[in-house]
Length: 120
Image 1 (tube, one colour):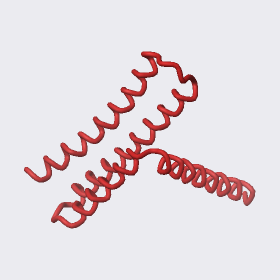
Image 2 (tube, rainbow, N blue to C red; image 1 turned 30 degrees about the vertical axis):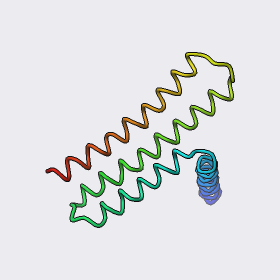
Image 3 (cartoon, one colour; image 1 turned 180 degrees about the vertical axis):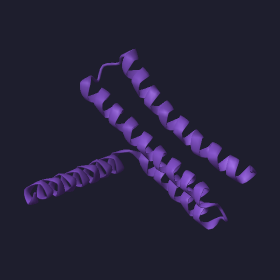
């Protein structure tokens, strides 16, 4: 049993380390991630300073994190496409554009939530 727990803790530690490595790599190379992080921090500060319900705060904070997730996935897609080929190809452009659209739609969801909370 101890070996099982030790193995799971080692795996959890590795997973955390690899995730941090991924964040650092994206942070170092992706200006969009740094920009969305700044927007997310401002949004979180506003959500925590306004008189919102716990559910409203949770929604704003969670959607902000989802924007960062979408940006990370988009960055990974772009890197994978660039790794596979540097040639111009309409499929590569489509993949990158779809990834960008995923970020935009996720950000739009955050904006809609803010609008609904502030108007309602």
